[in-house]
Length: 403
Image 1 (cartoon, rainbow, N blue to C red):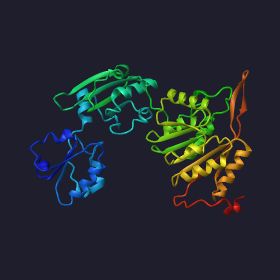
Image 2 (image 1 turned 45 degrees about the vertical axis):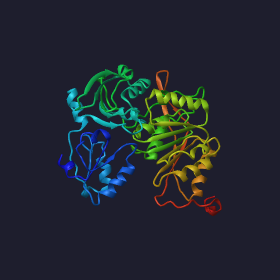
Image 3 (image 1 turned 90 degrees about the vertical axis):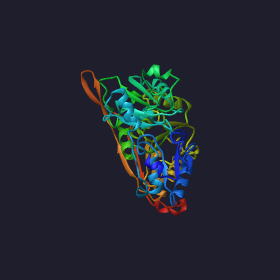
Image 4 (image 1 turned 180 degrees about the vertical axis):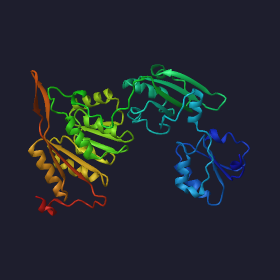
């Protein structure tokens, strides 16, 4: 109250501002994006006391961090209150020091399923677009049903309501206040977080038949993913995605990022989508079409994997390297001598010497009561990193020494 009384300007959502009808100063209503409001706050804060209202703790998925980023911490005093997450767990009667916290409020719900895979207890800020019922419907579609849910609405208000659901019930519940916190707890007591790299056998994926060879084998996949240096928030391109095995494992390594699975074969596109549903991965965007033509509208990648080129290896490497972020990694798998030669020459024309690995894997296979080795096709893995200060690429006739 003291902060409000000392302010010449009061900033907040309509709901927060309504708590102070007696305020006689100027008001700024936050709605339809806050970028312009932050610019205005910065302008008036030079000569005025400005009070920005927030629910609970302004630094917990709140506006506080944006205001501090804009004005500097030395010019902002934060007055926290118990967050709505604290209230929600208190109302439900669950401890919350072992929970994960997500927000899809005013954000894309993409990647929600990929992020919940590693947790047994979560609290989620939702909104009208990403409502509890819509999130539950997506969980059902991908087989994530072993959860108990609580929806805590209008916490601290006169119309506060706390209800418990199973996921099927929640998917059918259409009457939920947009001001809510959803708590999810797994009902599978045997749950263990998945490994950091799942190392899935190719039989775990649907694939084109009888073309069983058109999927990246798990040993090759492991080394290729490592060479890509994927971070939790990486944007990844998987060119020639096929069944989507690399896309799926890359997406699990980057639950806060996105993977673009580019595939030209219509059957491969549908199989890739089927595998995404089977493995409950929702931060992969399938892009039907031929590379490099379809790459232009995609966001710039942190890592690129080329598993198939349809005869356009040179053009794909040029386009991918051009869009790759500085320090990003480009990895190419080549099974034929022709593809290997094209990849190597494409890198050398750019003045790059790739890391090259020839991977020859043999797996033990039963033979009567014995065990024999069965060799897989050898694969050449090319990997390069884009320099931080990468200048314009050399023209083809300027790189004769690389020929």
